[in-house]
Length: 450
Image 1 (tube, rainbow, N blue to C red):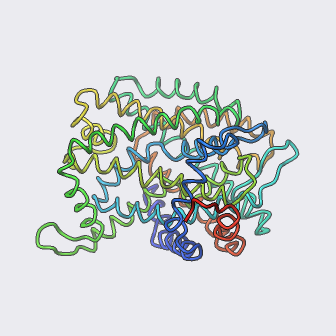
Image 2: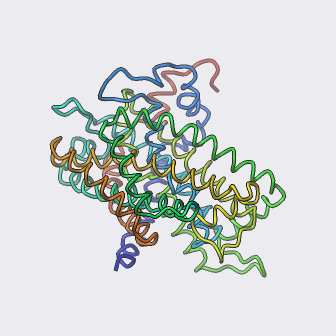
Image 3: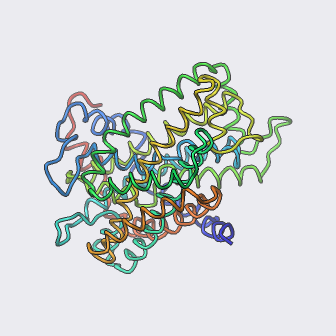
């Protein structure tokens, strides 16, 4: 029944809506994510080393731009970058990776629109806390509070699914496989740690993710690059598998299979959205907590976020799996990734991947908790937030002891439901999305930028 509902939600209509929204916004922005990528890097990543205001905030209800990025990446760079990629290749073939790239490219335009609109229409409630993202632009911008409430309901469910159960399940599975620790024990320990952090609110979440994400990202990316260098001679074949699989071209005879293409497209787009969350509106909820007041700048942070998450991390995971020639028929999920990393790390591969999944998924748990918290605050007010946190902590234990397939299927369903009102709002408010070339580039252009 769950799988049937999942197929309905993620039917051709959903894929068409996501691709068309991304394509429309990409054309509207004149391929900004591609033609001005150097400028995006300059005003996001490189500003971390030049501008102190990027890394600190004096507002007790806001977090800095870098903390916003770290929290947003924490919510996205979980199992989607490791287990999600392996699952995509196992089910959809190597070609699914190409469609993850397509999802990311168009997703950059979508997430720019989300963050820009979310910052434009955000406002503070009576407790001086930010209400932003789709909650703000569906309510204040579009004037449809019922649609904002609908999004908030789906967002809450998604925080329990993708942001909680799928992550907790991946942690417990990895810990059981590597260290033989029971899923229940893992769930209780993780739930306790999550509770300690999320009770401290967005400031504590931002502080933790600011420490975790940069270190985790550098370590994982470095390890993946090391494996790829060892298997450098197999890289051309890896890319060949990706492009052949994307268009259903058989390695023998050159025939084209429509069934292979359909499966690769569907799985690739679904896993792409699961990885970078472009179109869901979750990133905009987190970016709305930033102390920056420039909508276009927050939009560019979103573009950089998708680039790091999918184009860099997911691609590296895929190349590690494909270049090492791991047997896709005998392994799946985390075990497939461990098998691939054994090529360079031997018996220590399972420990490295287990710890990576543990920390990435844990960061996702605390990042997504704020998304659900924001949704509950919007619907019921501040008094209901403490009950949401208690439920969120309890569901960590449920997710840790559930079957992997059920956790991921439920996550896919809630993702799709969350995207529907969000994409409707973006399309209806597209005229309010300011062109970065007019509001940012011309205003802050310097002599070094061409």
